[in-house]
Image 1 (cartoon, rainbow, N blue to C red):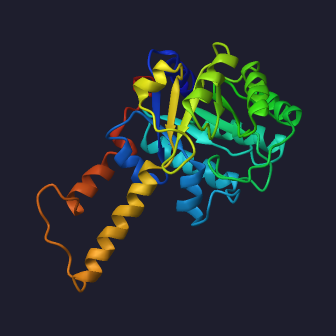
Image 2 (image 1 turned 135 degrees about the horizontal axis):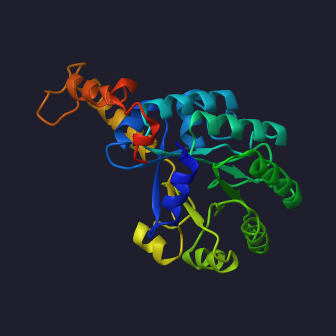
Length: 287
């Protein structure tokens, strides 16, 4: 199964393709009931796997191992993976991209930040010189087979946003992401300077970018939308509410009512991930 080509065809189809940010196998199990594509968010993975903020703590073997588990459980989902800056070194970036592709990734997102890195919607981001990033990007593009590569810039100064967006659009990268875009005016300006290159928009609750629907993004000329944290933040709120209620009830569980999530519903959800329940022939998998 050529997962990269499947995602590439989806990107080229009409409309804006949504990819939902998941942070562990359980959140992916729930998300798979609603959407056909996942974004393996660095923010979510750092939070769930390490209990740390998205500041460069992720080790690439951990990300590869997570992707392997995801692909086995979800053979029919698009899997776009956040690889930060390619884990610093260009040789490492190429190695990781090849490992992820062999493990079943559909695509990767690689940014132009330098360490210490930050979430794309945080302040204090530092950038690599454009030429240095382009050299790394070129090596990554040469090392992939059919994997989708999203070239991301975290530029914040207006002139630098335009310069980097134009430069990234001129490469063989499949998609360009300018992260932390602050207004629809700038969304339109980025579209205008990137020609016909597919564009990706990153939405995160409490972030710097405007809240836009898929139809609005389609009208603005964007082909992909990633939602980095809806599962993570929803889990945070729900867990906090459930434990607050449990504490207030002196440890007595709330009454189980029809439609609530309990042992049976949870088990039935997870049973869908068992590999023997999936088609044996990869060509039978409809991505």
